[in-house]
Image (cartoon, rainbow, N blue to C red; front, side):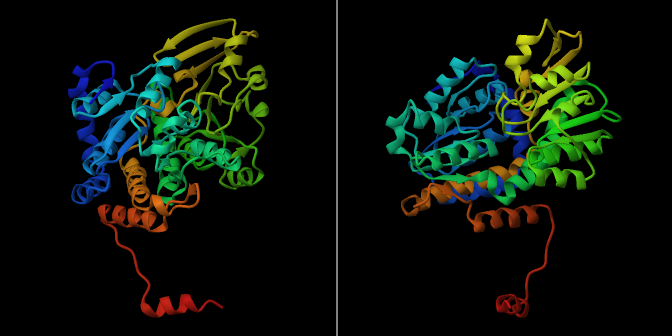
Length: 414
């Protein structure tokens, strides 16, 4: 066991957080019991890079129950919770992460997580995979495959695969229905506004919220903003999603046109420069900007810092920038993921489903690695369905099933 964390003596606080999520993640509880019996990861080393807070810690415990040796790091310097990292280290796991890591420290921790010849990669955003394909290619022969948690990470995988450079199979966890339909929509929708509200202590009702991007995450953010009483504007580059946003009852326009109107701006695009120089030139005085995409490039912070004539820290996690025309804009959590850098991330019940998909996908990889010919692997339908059926049981809900006559009817086709 080895670790590089802030303070091992924070472990008691971290363990209390983990115990709380254990009580609210029945799916993972049931999978943990299965893993204890089956030991699907006996002798397997797993390198994991996901936002290091209590729900992720419980996923690590579940994987360890299946016999895995874990090498854990965070996927964002500001989302790591030092007491949770300490709790995992105190349990004997290999943990390399701390809150507020510099770019150099963050890269070192990624390398430390990969330095022990991992067989399975569990990634959030693609930093582990990127490191393996660049500066740590000597570790590739040990890798059976991996799982990717996010839309951003999957986009990076698709780009690698298109160039025929992806060296091992990756399960596209984010594309599973039990992941993106709930995690991205309901999880992001709630946790983003948790982070904004606790950080700003300002009312949302009556304000104008600009949501950049109307994928599943953007849908959730817009829906929750509407529920809080805001007027919502959506900006998009995809005409189909723009029509969908309009028919969902939201205004649709270019970012340049939305800039003078918005009180809150939330970027959820997965792309850089969603709020850039043109928007800064037109933006409303006092606008609050935050990002809910994986990387801190959606708000062009480099350009904002260049043009700002002065800055001031307004509150914890709120930095003010005075623009040349005298207007002020306020950025939450340095433009990093607001729901994790300024909050606790998605609700436990939502991550129960997402991490159930992760755990079962990792087991699928170990069991089938010799038979996988493709590099981009869809989560098997039976895994998606198993998670949904278990979740329904824990929710105390039952649904109908096709009768034999109905099955025969459906099988007839035309």
